[in-house]
Amino acid sequence: IRASVGDRLVLQITSEALGLYRPEEQMRVVLETQPEAVSLALRELVPDQTHEAAFASFLETLRVEKVTPQIILYTPEEASYLVALTGRGLIP
Image (cartoon, rainbow, N blue to C red):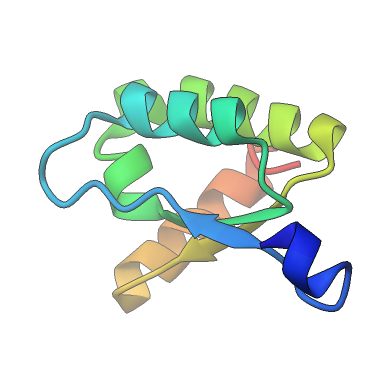
């Protein structure tokens, strides 16, 4: 794709789980792919509080690697949860 369009297009992948992949599997694929940007469903990567630290570490790695995340929120509750995570310093 990059050879065809040069830098005129941001290449973004999705970590969509389709009900098949665990959070760590989704994160591993993103890190191995090293895209410019990635969409991440909060509910898939942080299905409960036990996944918060891994998600925070993952986002920090994306920041360092200059991968732009787009965090997908499906409900107002997820938006509130993201605000809470941010307030706790878990979102870089």
